[in-house]
Length: 193
Image 1: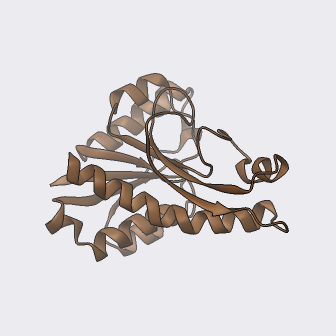
Image 2: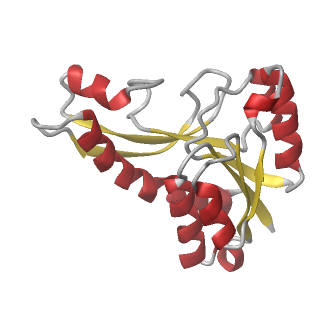
Image 3: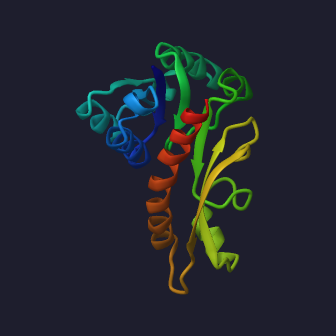
């Protein structure tokens, strides 16, 4: 069985979309894969309740309890590695990872970013797209590398930017596409791997 570990920091809507897709698509039978655990760096992350309700193991590695990023990542790596993951999926995990952590999961670490990378890496992507006069925006699933919001692109989705869009309305439209493409990219990787 190929285990997937999902890392979250908040409500976990992308994590929930992945779990639902796995359940609908019977990934365990079809792909020999399952979401084995959901781990958060925040004890109050709403997505942890959803994971528990769906019978998925959860853990919290609170970054605030560690004296350094490296100490936090050592503890996080141990929590992830307990599940022998085929894939580690960042789904709203709001921590920048060190090159050592990324290297440990090289080729197995995925992220979704709310822009059409390489455009608008980092934060405030929707507002930046509007301010730049973009006619389209979107989301990108990519393999994680040591460089923030870079790495091989696995899947993208495009949405129009409407004349009356705000960052919030554009974000909502992009999020619906994130929920479609992230599970699809994961399933494709599992089939190919």
